Length: 307
Image (cartoon, rainbow, N blue to C red):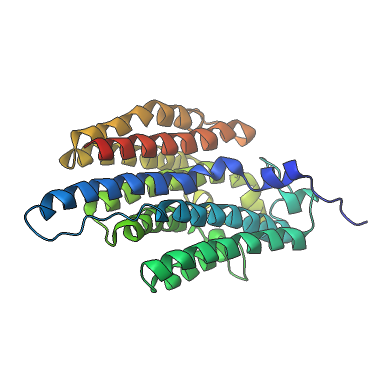
């Protein structure tokens, strides 16, 4: 029997909209870091020749790259996990291939369209900034595909959290600041570490929920390697990092403490994890971790601009 065509609602759910903060947050906080760099550069330029220019039109283009990559990796994971049977007994939101709502080929095509959109937008940034960014973009797309794709996906070997930290933390924040200003400073790097920690915490919460099904299917995530108790401790530790960064950024401006407004959300996000919740009861941890990341990024960006 030919599977029914997935509905628009199912395609949207398959794109995993709750993960979008992983794409939006790094661009937002990078804009704040770029603005802070511009202010510092402008002050220095009164006595020297420091270039304080920020190319603001590149910010929405960088956001397109980030959003296309996150949706692309979600569809790619849906496809790769679906054809391997990893999602057959999955607990959580809809998976298009695993549920039979869409054919593997159509989900793979959706992933490739998203990667193509990210590549085109990224090429615009590379042409107008630095050609070596083409290599960075290619590595990002390859990282997105081979997370669960290919014959030896690194997401099945416990390297997913590291990849998320690098791609949606270091690369996304520092890359955005670079295309906006032409350089990266310590403020941007600190923000990248914070956002990368948040993003990794989202994946840790997801993988804690999936420990039973991943173990059975042979998907050896970091949570499977660490075990349930230590993975829950890791989630708490990762959520603490951004607030340490907020305190350290006082060296840039006291307004950086605005980032602490996200702490109650982070505490709420960790609540199901520290309460030893399992299965569907852990879904709020994913949602609230992403929300805490977005609020921290917006508040920190505002603080850096005000500073």
